[in-house]
Image 1 (cartoon, rainbow over the protein chains, first blue to last red):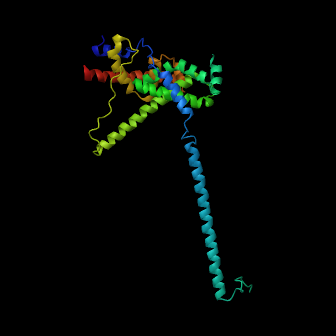
Image 2 (image 1 turned 30 degrees about the vertical axis):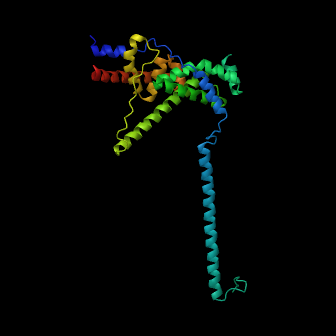
Image 3 (image 1 turned 60 degrees about the vertical axis):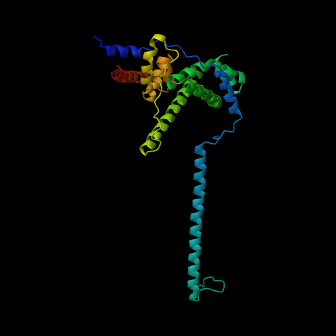
Length: 103
Length: 191
């Protein structure tokens, strides 16, 4: 024999039987059409997808990093060359144009 | 106008076609949102967003499903998005209260919801059921609402939720179990 609690639960579970559709609020259709109309003239703030922005930013950062690395390596090789040249000059191993003399 | 013709006209941006679409689907969308959100104002707001989304995305509609299935899917997604946003705010407010900020801010407690379509003799009991439905996990909530309130078949629900019929059966079974457990708790605290 079902307890009162079980009967109550069963009846509550069935309380939506025969439910009718709710009637949309008056004027909802006009508000929808107006909102879509407003949308047509709005400049879309998210026209460019965030993923595209991130990819572009990553590409720019990569190019900058490559440029920095290239500059550092170039500077290093220039300063190394300068160091070697000044060393050679000390030992009179360069000509007047700072080119190495074949000994 | 059949569905194929309607879709062609919608993709061409035909205003009358869009008005026809709204006429034929606004009640369905409103009811679907109301079933999940349990608030008529929220349901109308989301219904408006649904049709804006339909207008924006119709060009990408691949006609792999019926138009109504696609619209239902948008309605459920947007309704759940709103609920998730509210939960996030509630969580944030709770965290703030732990740090002594806004300790007097009342915690969000959804008011009782009486669905306007429920039969009069069931109105009081349906209040408890609606409370219990709002406590279900998202997927179970959607499946139960689409089945019990919208009266959709398992097949239709599976197409909307992009899952299998057996998954829908399983979701509904678990939803009913959970609802019974919740109702048992409500019974113990209220009667």
